[in-house]
Structure formats: structure tokens, C-alpha cells
Amino acid sequence: MSRLLISFPGNELMTDKIGAALKIERAAITIRNFPDGESYVRVLTDVNGKEIIVVAALDRPDTKFLALVFLLRLLRDSGAKKITLVSPYLAYMRQDKQFQPGEAVTSTYFAAFLSACIDELITIDPHLHRRSSMAEIYAVPCHALHAAPLISEWIRASVPLPVLIGPDSESEQWVSIVAKNANAPYLVLEKQRYGDRSVSVSFPDVAPFRSHTPVLVDDIISTARTMIAAVKHLREANMRRPFA
Ligand code: R5P
Image (cartoon, rainbow, N blue to C red; front, side, top):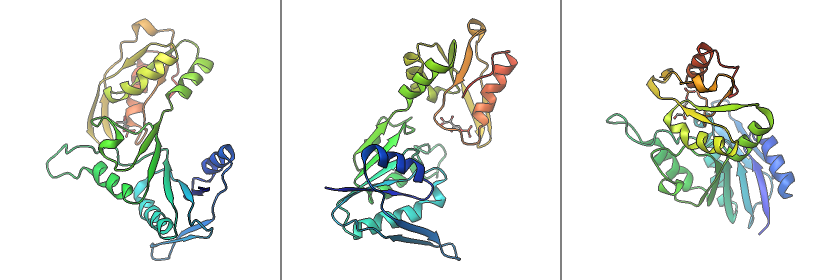
């Protein structure tokens, strides 16, 4: 089965890198908004009988999702044999339970919408916290790639005497692996979240790491309050300037 890549708008650079590595051409599409805000979607290359790999990072998902679904449906209707979505940043992974009565568990709903339109999903380090695998939410085969080996390699090559810091218990799953492969020690802080833009993190015990360079590792910076709270403590403790 021959393959074609499609770049969802904004993903051209990454799509072309994938295309160059795999020697796959990019199909032409048009996605734009009508003056009233509705989406216009057109595929200009013949996709009939082909595997189509759509590259779409899903940060700020609400502004992208409907156009993406229109594109995926159109591909199916145009005869695409297999539709693979490559979404390095996969949205709606964090609301994975009802924290308060009446809340929507949006990770389940989002996964159901997406699973209905694709045959396979490839992502990087999905935020699995209370769920142990993507198969618990997605109905299609998912492949989770990991950035940890590359981050470890970069730390080994670039940071003298590193100490890795995870700003909350959820980050331990990444920070522990990155630290192990970078041959570095790590600390995990305790985080309290009071609201979207209000967090506090515990003061790290940095006494054994005075001469180390802190490297903060987390899976997402959204408002950056988590990172800022952790960095503040490192400065107060007179640690070296950290990497994130
Ligand atoms: C928590 O679930 C994540 O791993 C991040 O720590 C968090 O989402 C960061 O959010 P913010 O940048 O808004 O503090």
C-alpha cells in the first residue's frame, strides 16, 4: 500500500522531516476558515487506496479539532485505506477522572471521537497517570514513543553534574527514567494545585546537590506556574541556573 503524508496546518516542518526520513511525499490540502468562522477543508491529492499519515500536534485542541475531524472523515470518504494520526502532543489526557461531581471525563470523550476517525495513533509520552495504557481509552492501536532517551543523551552531553528535578509526583515516571539513563540523581517535589493558575511545590532538599546543575523535567508546561514555583525554590536555595 503506498503512503502519503498530510500536514495539518502548522505541522509542515515536522511533516517534511518525517517525509524526508521515510521518503514519503506530502499530499496537498487546503484548510481555512470562512468569514463566519466555519472550517473549509479540501484534499487536492488522490488518496484512494493509500495509507494516509496525518501529522497534527494537538496543543490548543479546541481551535483545531473540528477541522481535523472534517479532514479525517473526508480522507475516509475519498477512499483512504488506512489513516494514521501522528500527534506528538496529544490533547485531553489530563481530565482522566471526575475530580468533582458533575465533571466531564474529557479524555474518554475525546478518545472516542478520535478513535472513530482513525485506524492508528502515534504519539509521544502521553499523559498516562491514573490510566496505565492508551488501550484503556483509545479503541484503535496506539504507539507511544518516548522522548526520555534523547533527553538523557542531551543531558549527558550538555550538563555537567546534573541533578534532575520532577516538580510533582506525576513527573516521577519520566524523571526517574531520564535520570537513570543520564547517570544522574533525581528529586521529586510535592505539588499542590489550588486552581488553573495557582500551585505550590515543596521545597527540595538540595543540601547534597549544592554543586549540581538542576534540570527540571515535566511533560507539559501550560501556564508555567508549576515550573516557576519549582525554579523559585531552586533560586532561594542558591542552586545553579536550571535547565528545563
Ligand atoms: C500535571 O499534570 C502536568 O504534568 C504538569 O505539571 C502541569 O500540567 C503543568 O501545568 P502548568 O504549567 O499550568 O503549571
